[in-house]
Image 1 (cartoon, rainbow, N blue to C red):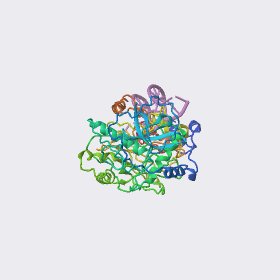
Image 2: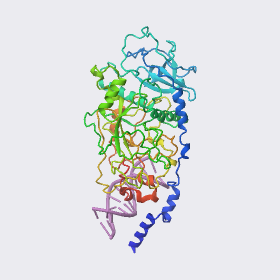
Image 3: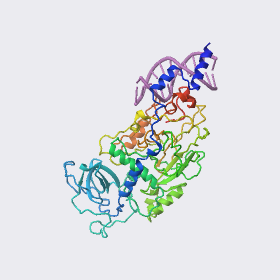
Length: 517
DNA sequence: CGTGCCGGGCA
DNA sequence: TGCCCGGCACG
């Protein structure tokens, strides 16, 4: 009797002839039907934009004119009210003042986007770049706008300074606190990775130009549509630990990760996450390796990806940090300019043969989760959504995932699950896991990878310093019940009707082990 | 209200 | 031990 019923149920489940209840539910949740994701071709509304940007983005304007060098607090300006200003057209290179981090900072205009009325300013003091509303920026009526080329002789205003790096002034300030330096570096990093548009060092291998393309456009679009935290790219995490540079990936096959990772971007919603900054646009050729760990150069337009730390370090050092290798304070600097990228690849599911059972996405929750300071526009555009949830138009979770593609097998033993590991490496590193982001809908929506998702996300306060600590402590707070992971779980991904594809844990209503968060 | 998952029950 | 589900917490 009971047995039969049970069986029946099972059968029903398996056969897609769902019973009433189930189906009803299904109907409700548009899980599977909702395959969003426009027509294959239509996807890239980005493309053009990207190009545009690229084209438009002027020359770098090599940061040479570092007039203000280190002595920052030198209030260049008065400009008490930050607002009432005449809306001027800022030109690239123009010196301006802007409120940042509670204080007035001077910087150079990177570009002024009229469309959104935003100005991207490169802060000399902080060595980073922010993007804020035009009205929050006012010209520093001190100097004349410098077009784009560094003035031949800057001796006039700039004391002696030696170019440390080619375009970026590395946080080499002599402030005492070392941590500060590192933090700054992190910030720089962040900003770099998020808004590479800016400078484009001429002679660097633009091997990854695509990354730029991928990044910019949606940064841009984010701004335009004002969808909240637009600029969020991988999650950054810093770790000061100096050990085991090797992430726990069994089979990091050294492949050029260039392409790949975009699985069947043709039909299911699985598109690559725009934010993944590697993304080799042209060929969605799929590779079927599992996890690769690569090191990517974060220098503005250099997307060089190498397979070894040493290599990347050397690259950064040689190409970007230039000759400054000697002074040992730069010794470590290369660390800030590259990032570890872990790519997980799913076999294209030519039948579900797949890899990597457990540690599905390599989660990056480093020992001390470093704030990913929502890059630029932090304080400018009001309340940025702290949560990551903003990334999905909720309604639009395309269920996609009809079975085939990426299926991670191996569920069993859900409880013996190896809590995922956190690769710790000496450098700030990002781990990006595309695996899960069933990026849904339009490729526009900035779907973030779910790395580091610990629901207590980082808020984007401008003052990030103390943040660092806060974050890390906050993380630990989930004591009783696992804070609801925000990763899509099997149910969501596959839909109830494909329950047989869920991981066992999910099937048993246990903590999902496939998409752990 | 949907969903993730703990706790516990049944075979 | 494998499987399932009631029910609660979270969003």
